[in-house]
Length: 81
Length: 261
Image (cartoon, rainbow over all chains, first blue to last red; front, side, top):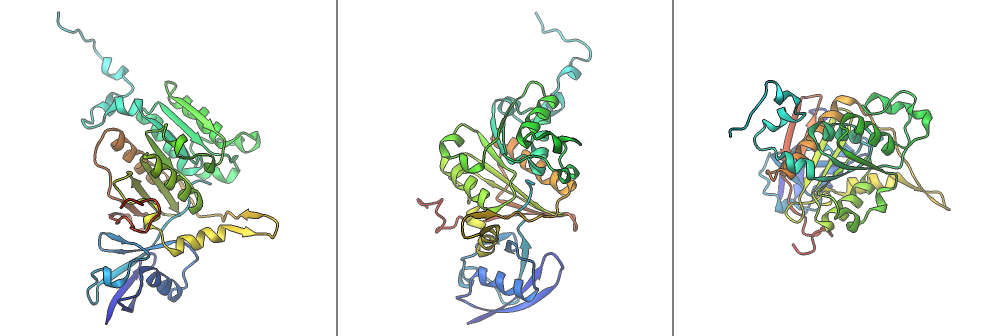
């Protein structure tokens, strides 16, 4: 079974549609859209509504509806130097 | 005999206006022992806010010295500090005492890896003001095992995040990390064949986001010592859009910091 989602780039507002298998993980979504948008190397997370998704979670665990929107957010690392 | 008062005496109390916030436990604030890890941008702002709020027992850990490019966002550093050879922690502690002479602020000029759970158990809460994943993971794991609340902040340009970790009830930092974080960590360590070098990229940083993120960290610290509910669990701030969102996170059953879950 395939579910189609829309992923929004929080930094640019751009979106891309992705077709996901139930076995795909959140990490694979991050890597897929990061490569598509040629993102700078860095840490990213995915949100679904008010929830942050964990990297190892599979699509089948996420209760994702068809055409639902996810968002790719940079996870800031700095603050000391 | 009724208690007597005199005109203007409330204005002699440094904390009078804070005491007017009914839920703030000022005795808890003044009693709390706080560790601030990192005396750079977030650390400067956090210590400044802790002092003005009335925290009295603060230790500041950092082993770096000041460079001139720190001065665009570090309120407690001064022109010339970069030539003094003094450590950031020592300078922050000294200037914090200027802000609030009743406070006991101690500098610890060591690496974060020098702190284990035993050292952390002496604190009521820890503020993470760091700049890399490896140091965060160390602080996160050890504070979780010590049972000490940990409030982590991070910035990158106009973006920031704050996460509040309340062991053993909430997810920890590692629960929210994924392969992209570990790839970042791997890139920081480059092997020369003889030694491992820690590479620090120059990240975008400015004062407005720094001050907002540090202020949220200190406000969560005030809630913790006042026994108020804290944010659940992560705040993401986007300064360009002018938005912030509190996002919930689940405990990762596979996270090594949650063996009993």
